[in-house]
Length: 75
Image (tube, rainbow, N blue to C red; front, side, top):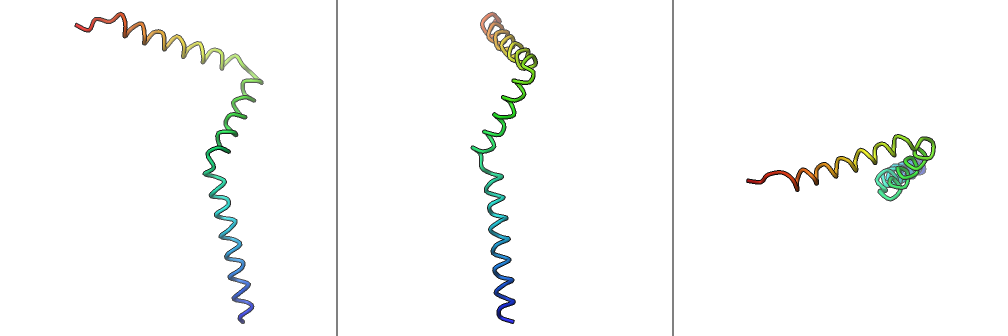
């Protein structure tokens, strides 16, 4: 009976260790950043046009906001 309890304890410890490893892996920010960067790179390599259009739109938006801030009347 004692061996059976020890086996259950060892199984529970092993399961807890696997769970904690999975949680640690899920919250590993560096690993997540690398995965996103890889997906972005792959997406850009397969079809760069949407990325170029998005970058151009962002640049135009920034220029428009800066121009509005400079040229607007603050009276």
